[in-house]
Amino acid sequence: MVRRNEIREGEVAVAMPPAEDAGLVFIGRIRTPWTDRLACPRQGRLDGPVCRIEFDEPWAGGLAGLSGYDKVEVLYWLDQSRRDILLQSPKSDGTTRGVFSLRSPVRPNPIGTSVAALVGIEGSTVLVRGLDCLDGTPLIDLKPDRCSFTPLAPAQPGDFETGP
Ligand code: SAM
Image (tube, rainbow, N blue to C red; front, side):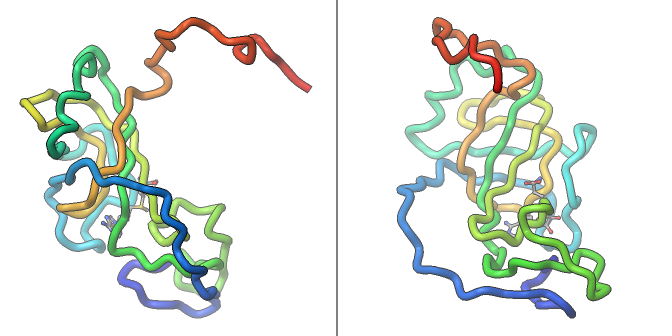
């Protein structure tokens, strides 16, 4: 795994294909206590420090109804990651694993996800515990945690389908 964009013994990088524009829009920034990747938690913890998720205009209006949940899923763009390392060596010992068997920040599309505890909402800012990203990390999305969310819309046929 790459922590400061170095490549380690045994790791394999690939040529990145040209970007295809998914039309992604950053909707805010995440404020955390961490300014160094090596000081961030590897995974957030629900009793970790309170972090501030600051929504840009006009997105704060979309927070209506969120206060009823105790956990949220946060998606963010790990903007300082390199994206080209297919086989990574998390232990820096020459043994490698594929990127899709890891939660490394180094991935073709460096999306981070965390389930965080909702601490409060102050205007356009959501306060949470449970993040692991650098201060200023761009926000992609926030939604209620899937375990506490029951769909509000009527069921659809696929909801009743089971195997094979
Ligand atoms: N919880 C997320 C997940 O599982 O998808 C992210 C896990 S990733 C292992 C967390 C690490 O990413 C941090 O320890 C830090 O080293 C790195 N990181 C945090 N913010 C970053 C950023 N903005 N750009 C690049 N790397 C970042």
